[in-house]
Each structure stands twice: as structure tokens, then as C-alpha cells.
Image (cartoon, rainbow, N blue to C red; front, side):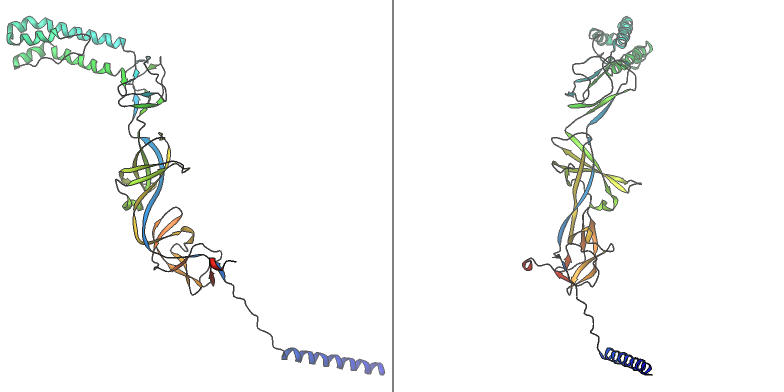
Length: 373
């Protein structure tokens, strides 16, 4: 009996304790959670619109302005000359580049000259009888005729009768045969058309040269042209006569060139326009790779920003009421690492460095060098 009473009292006590505890919990007010406002420190700059020069950057390889490929128009064995026909050899204007053995051809030429001389000699008696007034000029022609020199032009005929007589005796045909051979004889010797250097040599002394065979390349190493592609979208910026800054990739050497030609055709595959820049100076070489920076035009009332500040291809973050806000811009020109833009009024604060996780409405604090501890 006593044990039963004790159990009942314990149950009542526990139930009362639970009731009181629940009452106290319900009466207690829960404190509202306090969310700390996080402000990121950002770097900004102020928009100051001005006139900005537009530069187009592109690259290409140098090609000599005066460059010729040497081909043989005759056949024969390559002979020794005063200077070796080797890559890198320099020649002055009219120096012999290539000399091909022409002994056989020269003998044939002399034979044809002899035939011409004999043909004219054979008609001299007839000229003296039928064209006595013309005899002196033909006699003078024979006196000046030399097998070792280029033959002079035939005397001018003064009548139709004389013309038909000379032609009918085969004099004109023999003359032009000799002139043709004289022209061809000159092709056995190739002379330098200008001061230059041999950049390619494909034959050696003693080689049998065949007609149409390529012998090498010869350039003038003082004036070069750089052919560079420029996007067709920038064609309105290109102007002949514009000065261009040229540099090697390492940026250790630079030259100044000038736009001399602009192709009127757009490349169908790359949608670019070939632009030709002329340059001269020391340390330039055929085939050298150069980067060209040309000022196309100037953009008025514009501002330049880093490319990584662009959001959604047409917006940037500005500072408004200590928070980030997106502002729409107009892109005037795209450089490799920067953009030239319009659309932001003077005095607008813009991010100078993009911050991770940026979003419109984000509260920020502008970095102040004076407050830096």
C-alpha cells in the first residue's frame, strides 16, 4: 500500500514538473537572430571621358619589297663567276649572279652573223646598179659590221622597190634571226638588277641547268613590307599613310613603318583585310615575325577599362549608394586586354578590379589609402 502511494506521488510530481517547465518555455521570448551586414572593400576609379586613340594590334612576317626568283631560260652547265652563287652572298647592281656555258650557242650565233654578212655582200653589185643612190649606206653598214659586236640595225629603205628587193633576197629574215639569237645569248648571263643578297641558292658550279629550272632568290635587304590581317569590322579605321609602330615579340626592338596599301577584298575564310606596311632600318630580315600597332582613329567622349570588368557582354558594375549596380555601356572598340566604352557620365565610380561573387545590390566599402592601417 505504501509502495503504491509512493509511485502515485512520484508520477504526480513528475507531471507537475513537466507542466511548469513547458509553461516557462512558452513564456520565454526568443531573441531575434542578428545578421551582420558584410561589406567588401573594393577598388574604384572615377569616369573621366576624353578622346582616346584607337590602336589595332596585329602581326605578320616581313617580305622584301624588291625580291626576284631566279629561273633559267636556257640550258647549259653553270660556270664559275667572280662571286660564289651561295646563300648570303652580297652583289652590287650589274654584278654577275649566274653564268651558264654558252660556247655552242655563241658559235651558232657567229655562224648566223656570217650568213647575214655574206647575204648583204652578195647583193651589193645589184644595189650599185639598180639603187646607186643607196649604195653608200649599205657599204657603210658592211664596214661597221663586226662579228664580235651586236649587229647594227639595217639601213632604212627609202622606196618600196628597195624594200621589196631587200626582203626578197632574205636579208630581213637573216637579220631578225641574228637579233633573236643575240637576245637569247644574254639569257646565259644573269646580272643583279639592284644591290642585294642571295637568300636562296639551289644550284652549284658544274651543275647542268635545264630550261625553266629555279636557281634561287635574290632580295634587296633595305626595304621590307609587312602583310598583316585586319578584321573587316575595323576597315573604316584603316588609312593609307598612317604611321605604324612595329616590334619583335620580346619588345626589345622597334621600328616605324607606314601603311602603303590596303586590299580591296575581304578574305572569305577569315573575314579580314590584308594591309601592307612598308618599313626600313637595321636588324630587319626577310621572314622576320613582327607585331604591328597602328593608330586607326580616335574615339571622342570615351573611357578605357580592363576587359575583365565586362558583365553580360554589355554591362559594368558602378557604385551607387555604397552598393554595386549594373550599368549598360556601349563598346566602341575592343583591344586585346581592354575595352574603349561610352555611356557612363563623368564622375561615375566604377570598379577598377573585379571582385569575386559580385552581384547587383552588394554592399561595399570603397578602399581609402588614408584609412589603411
